[in-house]
Length: 179
Length: 85
Image (cartoon, rainbow over all chains, first blue to last red):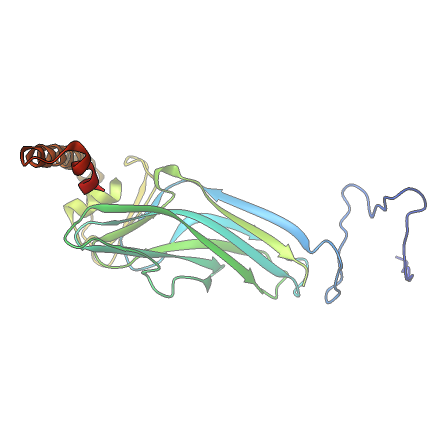
């Protein structure tokens, strides 16, 4: 391998400078700052199978995506769009939460299980459909494969929370951003 | 609908349901919740669906009844609409 040290590279003719060829990988060295190409890779996961939870213990929604960062200095921008349904069966309120995990670590949301909530005094069997977005810039400091997932839990006994109700699609997008 | 049927049978049930088809879904019972058979859950679903239909019908009938009572009191259709927001 040879090393080229120059202050500028310009196209020999025309206006297009091409780096690499099909199948090649062009990396920016760890710690180096690129003036272009900040998004290094993008991964998407989708899920449409409903999962319902009437417990206060978080359970996987099935929405997941994995990415292997090129450098420990890079960050992962996580964009989640999760469809949900919360319902009250016996109480006059219903709530739940959806949180974002990196492997087994909670990285966003779910501190309180009433992040999604409604109150209907004196009425039961009410439903609230919606979409929860979670946008999080993660600093995993890793070059190992990372799996991002979402989990759901209900608020009070007698409530339930479901994700992907009626097969409404949920998505998770992972973008590796040059550090 | 599956979790609704479970909570109808046991309002305190602590359960996670994965999937939408009663025959193929996975159901996990937690925190000492007594297991409910898929047959019992399946049997509850038509009851639940009927309750939802009945509740909807009652709402429509109550609205029509209220409107006719208000009309009998002399309110115009526009005034009744205004009351309904």
